[in-house]
Image 1 (cartoon, helix red, strand yellow):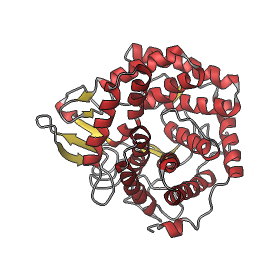
Image 2 (cartoon, helix red, strand yellow):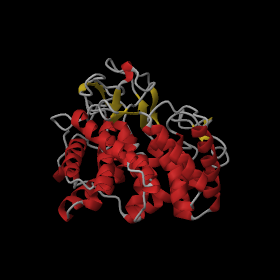
Image 3 (cartoon, helix red, strand yellow):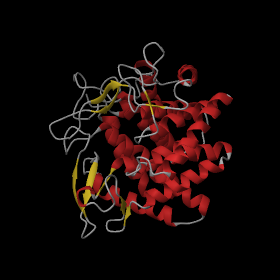
Image 4 (cartoon, helix red, strand yellow):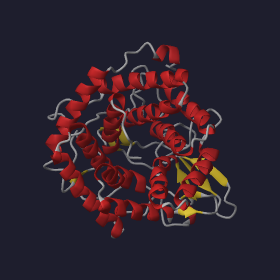
Length: 392
């Protein structure tokens, strides 16, 4: 079932009372998780509803620390601040010792942990760690093509590509320019999004997950998927990264051309939602499919719409805020975890990766919680009731 804005507006919207109740429930679960997830981090996805304890590895640990900072902001409880500060120390050592950082996801890791810590508490160690992370990310910038290489060793021919996810890593570079006065970081970020939107956005307003760049000419070469259903499909989380990533770039650049780009990727997302407004993991699938959902894609999209609405004229702001509140209502009612005995996560029905004939993924975290879904759910709830200064 293809949605229209007229049909979408007939759904119930999340009001302040519902959001506050959902946020209190989520914070209660976070509070109960502190004994396990202070010196350790939750695994990227849950297993039969429950996260396992891991070291500070993979690209996902920053989301949990971001959840702790959001809980601290909402409650002013020192227990959340102390736990998050312990984790900031872990992130300092991770970047100083270059532990599992051979990729572009420095923003996911350090914006939500260390930049947040510096903004909220003035933690100088956090600032130092985040700047080291920004330098590391800047080291992945490729002048031929003007983009940040996503994976693999820098300059590796088989990995000379970008992915749409990186749009959420760019704010770390803008922040680094703000605090150092060195414009090189912001210049790299601006060049990257120009390259990215030039190749990942299709004529029908869907997006490629990843795009290869010709090493010799620097020109876009071809797009494929890594986690979507097929090379020419729209991976739901990738489309959501596009929504929020473009909104964040507009926040920093104030280039009006990004408003139209935002509308294109967002309208595609909204018009391809199933009847219950929780997207399947890929937009190849629609109402009635037996394929799994990806609730995290919905949460990311909500955050992007609420951010961009701040810069739009009244009519368009109301349009996207209205859509966001209706998706958030669906998330709270159908995916928000209210029972710690069911899960120690916050947002149910996520999908980390789903295998298909055209991707190279193995099933992982299918119909489970994942840490980024938990974070963006908390951020969406926070944005809905507060004038929130973002960590990005």
